Length: 334
Image (cartoon, rainbow, N blue to C red; front, side, top):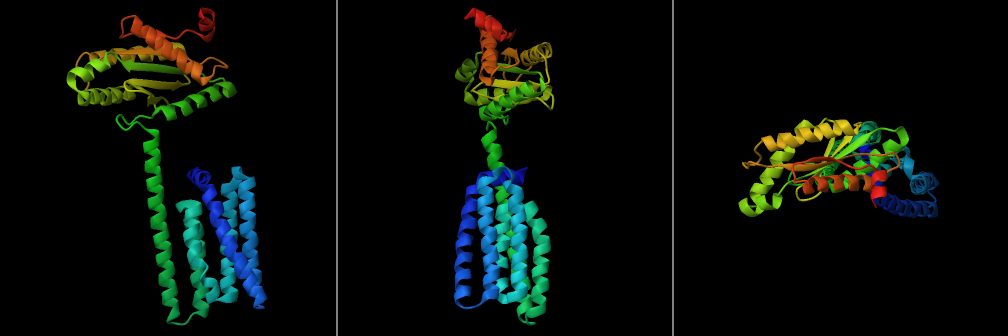
């Protein structure tokens, strides 16, 4: 999955890299033909065809581009080994950039799998036609290139994963953010349409949170949110998801849950918050709106019904849990 995601984000860069390599291989092919070296021209020409095919296939079959890229990289490694077999030192020069490019295009896992066969094969070929002085240099330089490619690729993937976590989570509480909530709700709607699975939303926020910030400072308010969110998250199932969508406003998505069960959980959360101290502050309460997804209901309408239920709870005096009206009730009311 990670390999496919990397490719989907970087496919344009991959195509440009292939196009650059293609221009170089075309140039070398023309030079070899003009010099009458038809054997070398055949190898560079074959590489040209592989690169051109790869560009066309990725552009037109992006859904399977990951598999195509790996297959073409395997073919490219075979052509480089054939070039080494035929051309010796002239073919070896292509091995070094190929190691680096493979890790960029394939990621650490698949590139390491390919290099585990490719690099020993390069060393085996070099053993047969290099001198005693040349072989240690080939072995050492190729090994260092392989090690550095692994290190750089691993660092790049760690940084990428860290950036994805930052982009998907709320920096204060650590729960997922609004963008992730929108994707999760859309997925729940899709599951409802395909498999008739139930799902509920619990939308809640902290009562009189502005007063806490004004009287005790934002640091106390932040501590209240962090400790409260940790307590709420501990009461949710592993399949449930918790999101922060505003300053003190949160959403819990409960898959495979009916309205009665979601309401019971919301009441449990409300009572738990009211009975505990968070961030060194007593008397914290929350208001909650609960809505079950209806068949054919768009995601924005589902969230809007939960929001309306939450604000009815505010109007009733706060520290309330309110069930959302069904879409047909809302339609009649309007």
